Structure formats: structure tokens, C-alpha cells
Image (cartoon, rainbow, N blue to C red; front, side):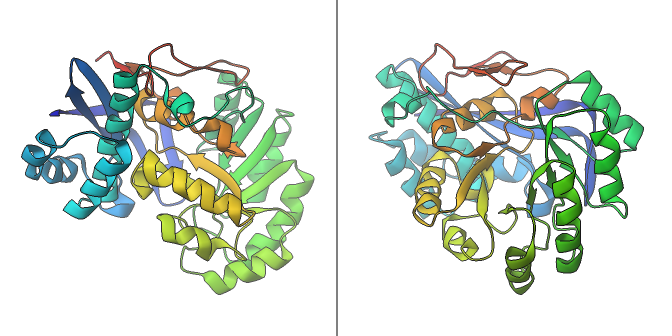
Length: 337
């Protein structure tokens, strides 16, 4: 397989703020894998929280480029195993795994969801994320993008007041994501107030290692709690049982579609709700997530919707949340920039 690596800086429509950072641009790596006249595309974004840069991913991939060239793509699963044995970071593995899956589907002339035996007759709609800002700015973002389901980023000293203010402007369902910013007591107290304000669930309220605190929250919260930073890799899914009601799986964190599918199966076997989230990827990464939709209870795949301009075509998300799956096989991605 021939490997081509492309660096992009994606400009966001608005400054995006969560409890620990703010940004106006998102650096991302696109991996192109080509074989027999077909090209598959994969993506992984940089992430300071996990000490991942685009250059660090490029260096990892360049180091094994010759071995990738000689790899026989029998299956994406076999390729993923090869990448794990090579010791790459999960972010680099994700970009390569997504590209290999897309390429595999294109070589076989079928979309991935069809290869996996998933029906697209029913799937959850994505939320649209509202980052931390002034209440006026958050309202402006909602008015700019009317949507039936919003994820509200929290982690301030007036979180309930924010949700109360936003509720005056929409009847949409809310989800809230504290990104590890709350204490157990704060989470429990907030949960009762947020439930009255039409909030569906709370995502990652406590720091990832506060397992005892999550036990208390799990027992006393008025709302379901979903793991994000506490559920990174496959082995974390079982650890979330009895601490969370569900898990949010990120392809970049776990290493791509291949381990994500195993995580979904494991979570379902433990009666955990299953969500897949994004990292402000372009349509390259979002189209990969879309292949998993029929298996999910919740999804956060609004990354490309938050960009000023995209770099690819693939899955299309309509204003009512309906997903238009691409006609191209694989993940259906075509790079346009």
C-alpha cells in the first residue's frame, strides 16, 4: 500500500471552549492509503490533553512506511493488529485504521456498514455542540444553528445558570459535558436541577481517575452519567460498569474503527449505553463514525459542522439530523482540498 500524509489546519466557525482549553483552529492529519487504483482516507486530530501533535503522528507513521508498503490488506483487523505490534500511538493507529477500512470497502465496492451487516433503517441523530462562552454568545450559536439536540459544554462556576438561561431560547433536548470539572457533590446537586431543565444526561463530570466519586454519583445522580475521559481504550469499558450508565467511545483515542466495534459489543454485553463522539474532525473522520450509527444509542458527530470550511465530501447531515450516506463505498470519503 502506498501512504501519503497530509497536514491541515481546520478553522472553526467560532472559538471553541471547554473547561480546560479554547481554540480557533484544529490541526489534523489525513492519511491516504492507496492500492489497486483505490484510495482510502483516515484522520486523527492533534490533542494537547494527550500530548499528540500532527508532527508526532507523521514521525511515527514515516518510521514504518516501508513495512506498510509491503503489507497485504487481507482485512482491516489484520492491519490494525500489525499497527499495534509496531507500537504506534492510538491516534496514529486511528488515522491508518480509518484509511484501511475505507480502502477495504472501496476495493470490495461496498459501504462499511453493509460489510459489517448493519442496517441503516434506524439510527440516532447527532447533537450539536455549544462550547463555553458568554450566555449571549451561546444563545447566538443556537440561533445560528437551530437543532433538536444540543450538547452544552460546562465547567464554570455558574453552570446551572447557563443551562437555565439557554433553556429560555429553545425546546431542544440538552446534554451537558463537564469535561472532568465537577466534584461528586456538585454533580449530584446539579443533576436534580438539570433534570428539571430538560437535560438528558451528564457526560464525564469528574476527573477520569475519581472512581470512588463516580460510584457515589452513579448511586445518587438524578440523571444518567456517560464516561468519556474514563473510557479511552478497550480495557476501560468493563471498568466503567457500576461507575457509569454508558460510555462515549472516541475513534482517535481507542485507535480507530476496529477497536471501537469491539468496544461497542463489550458495552452492549454489560448493558451500558453506547455513544461515539468526535474530536472536531473533518468529514473524513465523521464519515467513519457514521458507519457505526446503527449500533449506537447516542452520537456526537458534529465536528465538520463546526468548521468554516471542510476538506472532504462524504456523509451529509441535514438540518433535521437525518444522515445522507455517501454513494461511494467504504466510508464514502473523497478528499477535496
